Length: 106
Image (cartoon, rainbow, N blue to C red; front, side, top):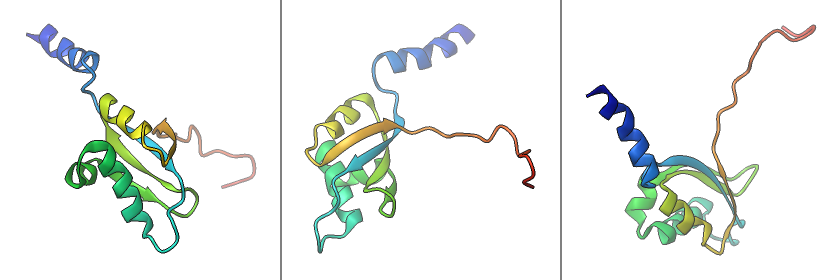
């Protein structure tokens, strides 16, 4: 039984159903168009509907970059990459500080 539980996640990943978080860089929104609406529209076009897009959307970026983060399966990722407004897609990662001990900084 325990071997089955170990292999089950591996099988799901091998089938391409495992979702992961991605950063999606897109063209800036057109003047007069709300950035969040614009980004949701890109994701909705890729995923086949606004409800799916809202469920996948994690965060909208607007100050430093134009884009969003979303939780996507491999097939959804490929659909997002095909959108003409998408410039780049990167896996999201969390960086952790290894030490809080800096020379002369407290």
